[in-house]
Amino acid sequence: MLTIAVMTADQALRKEITGILPRGYRAAQRTTPGKSDFIFYDIDTLKPGGIRDLGDEHFIVAITGQKRTGPVIEAASHGAYEVLQRPLKEAAVLAVLDELKSFSEEIHDIVPAASLPPTPTCAIVGHSSIIMDVCKKMARLSQVDSPVLITGETGTGKELIAESIAQLSSRFGKPFVVLNCAAVPETLLESEFFGFEKGSFTGAVSAKEGMLKIADTGTVFFDEVGELPLPLQGKLLRFLQTQTFYPLGSTREMHVDVRVISATNRDLSLMVREGRFREDLYHRLSVTSIHIPPLRERKKDILPLVHFFINKYQHTAPRRIRGITREYVKRLTSYDWPGNIRELENIIRSSLALCKSHYLTSHELRELLGRSVAVRPASSPESFASVLVPFIKDAIEKGEPHVYEKVLAEVDRCLLEYVLSYTKDNQSEAARILGINRLTLRKKLGLYR
Image (cartoon, rainbow, N blue to C red; front, top):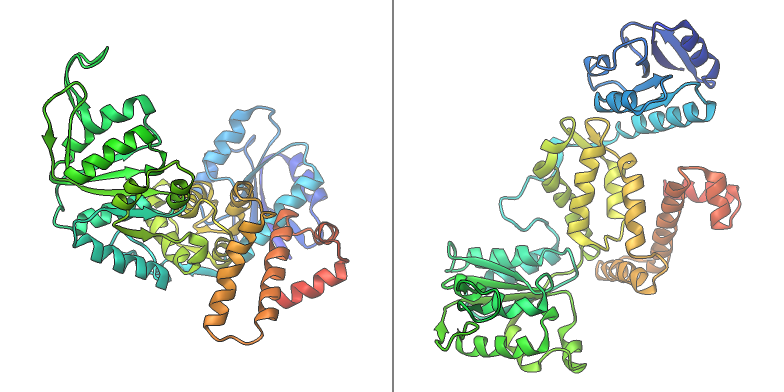
């Protein structure tokens, strides 16, 4: 029997709550929380600020009869888990109680903050063999001065790798200049690269140094280099060959000493074959190269990254984070991460902003991951294969037996988990969506839970 402390000076509200509670719950009139499982707090007869006075160790459902947004906002800002409006509706009360019960059960199975992997001192986070190989190659390339082409999907951390190469090199402490080739209008790219002289075009009221001059003695990072227009590609090629250039409107050749690192999420070799990227420039940029695998191929790095981002952003959370639930970790590691580390970072920041206790739980992920799934549709064959193939490869390399059964079991488990999350654990609705009967669904759940 779960106890709900009803804190109100309104006898009618107390009767309303008592009459609507389902079996398994009992209401107790309280002026203090006592040993209650949950608290129903009347913000109409008691001050909303009293919610904060109760501390954040209690799950508090605020109740109001006012039809204004002000009391709802005030109660939520003081730490109420949920706000219900009168007259109370049975379905709304049951939904909140079910969620509170699920929430309180989940936070009994946590990964305490003390047991999380230590926050790394280096910029590159992770402990998978894949990221270790990337770090080793990055360290070696930092010791030579040749151009580096960094490839990888959006959000994998290409700029971070470029910065790390510069910091580990002999050019540490020298300028590190970033030029995003996709963010600058095509008409301005040349002047951004090389600078211009006063009067070289309408509006050039004074001379301006280009990025290459600013980066002299240091490193220039061309992000999204695949977006460069063909005419500018030829001028960049000449600079790479000679380390010299002419500012717009100038007849004086300038010489600089810069290391060039570039990055792209495009297939430059394909662009070369299609005539959209100069082959000679491609070979100049890719004297050495690093490929950063997507996050879905290195799931072992997710937990260290989660801890890193929690430490980085926990000052933005409404309360101190003591740990994360194992279900939270499970949901993160079963997701495809089409946006890679950038998407994971945003999810952690959103989770911290939305958390209703000292722990991050799967409840914060229901809306966030559901919204993100639309970026890479599950029906995409490429997306499905990109997740499945690394899983199969890992099983084969480990010499695991019965790979066929193992793959089917994993697909089954992920499918059930997602559909149940979509239906908010409504098994009847999940069985309908899956096209199986409820008994079959329960048998499968017994295997994978």
